[in-house]
Length: 424
Ligand code: IMP
Image (tube, rainbow, N blue to C red; front, side, top):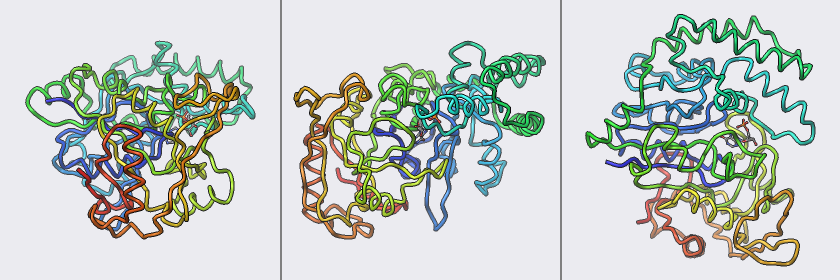
C-alpha cells in the first residue's frame, strides 16, 4: 500500500480536522507528521465540538491507529489537557495512539523564548501562536533538542538542565523575565510522567510495516502550504515543511510510498498572524466573511484576516506538493454575497501580469486581478448531493477546477461530518 496525504493549501485553518475525521473510517492508520500545538483541528459530530492540537484526528474512530510522528514538536502539557478533553476511555486512547520516540519535546522555556523573540521584533513580529514552535524546531535543527525517547533515559534531567541553561542565557540576552520557572517546570515534569504511560515507539517501523501488510494510512498535515518554512511567505511562516515532502521526513516514509495527495482549500482565503496576503479584504466585506465563517483562531481565538480566493497561490501550493485531488471547504459562507471574486493573476509593480508567485511578496507586492462571479445566494448547508447545488455555484466550482487543472472531488457545506458532498 501507499500512504495518502491530506494537506491545507492556504495559510492554515482550511478545515483539515473535519475532512480527516470524515475520511478516517477509510484509513487504518492516521498520522501527524509536522507542527505541534500551533495547530487546531476542529471536529464536529453528534452535536459536540472538539479541537485537536497534537493528537491525530483519527482518534475518534475506534478502528484507527493514530501516530504522532517524528516530525512533530510535542508539548506534553497541552497533550495531557487534550487527552482529558476528549472525554473518552483513556485505556482505549492508549491502545490507539503511538508517539514516536524521535518526536521533539517542547519544553516550557521554548514557549517563553517564543514570547521573548516576538516581543523583541516589535512591529515585525511573525504573529506566532506563541506555543514554542520556532524555538523547539531551532533546537532540533541546532542539534540541541530533547526527544520523547530521552524521557526514558537515566540522564534525561541532565540533558534537560543543559538545554534549560542555554535557554536561560538566551532569555537574559532578551532581558525577558516575565515567567515563573518553578511553576512551569512542575507542570512539565508531571506531564512527562503522564506521557510515559502511553506507547512510545519507533513509529518509522510501525508505519512502513503497516503499509507493507496492506494497511491504509493517512498522513494528516497541519498549518497550510503557504506557511511552509521553505515555500511560504518567509519569514512569516511556521517552522516546518507543511507541504507533502514533510510527510516523508516527518514519518519516515520514502517518497515512493506516497499515493494520493489531497489538498484542502476554502472557497475564500484567511490568514492569522502577520505577513503578506494579496487578496485580503481589510474592510466591511472581510468583516462579513469573518462573522459568517466564524473565522477566529481555534488555538488562539484571534480574528482571522479574510479575503478572496487566490488561484496563483493555490496553483503554487498544488505544484509544490503534487496535489492529485482537491476538497473545497466553506463555500456555504459565501452564500450571503451578491457577487464572488476570484484572483486569477497578479500584476507586478512593473505592469507585468503573471499567474506565478514572485520570490517575495513583501519586496515585490502584487495587485490581484479578479474574475467576478454571480453569487449563489442559496443556503448550501442542507445540500447533500451535487444535483441539489445551484447552477451559479457549480459554475464557480468548475471554473476553479479548470483553472487549477486538478479535480475537486469533495465539497463541504458545513462543519458537521454529514455536511459533505462527494463530487466524483
Ligand atoms: P507559529 O507556528 O506558532 O510560530 O506561527 C507562525 C505563523 O503561522 C503565524 O502567523 C501563525 O498565526 C501561523 N500559524 C501557525 N499555526 C497555524 C495554524 O494551525 N493555522 C493557521 N495559522 C497558523
